[in-house]
Image (cartoon, rainbow, N blue to C red; front, side, top):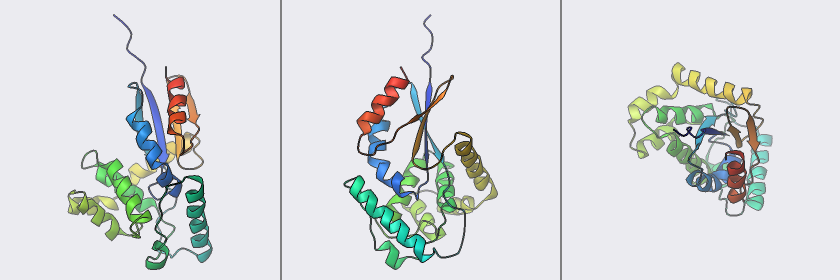
Length: 210
């Protein structure tokens, strides 16, 4: 009998409110669709910023808007709705959005869809994913059990799962998002990310996972 092929884990470390993760989304779709059969994609929430009710300082608002403009220059085709900064009260708070992904995942394989819903709300629809109402509305739009989702959203068990994922990111040496790490039984390898070159990323993955 032949030996079973080795299974590789491709860890994708992200935050749903990370603007570079939004820019990477089209490339990630292509990569995921063409991954070798022996490579499993695992999304891990890194958690950029803890819960807070404090409005984002003006300096941080300007910095993030400048990052959006930089992304538009470096990753052509990436859309941002700058009206967000006029109609919302931004907060440097992403943990709740991360918990929303976990809460959606507790009702089935809805984590990736919730990530996209959060990104669309934030970057295209000028809605604030730091707010419970935005996240619950997204769950309702996805036809999830909105009452269950609302209960799970800030439940200690959901935060404990986020803590576990954030600890994994720290253990793996993740310094920012997005990050790709390919893990084998022998080692871990960081995969360079260029949102404009999904084919190059795929080539690196295939080379590292024969």
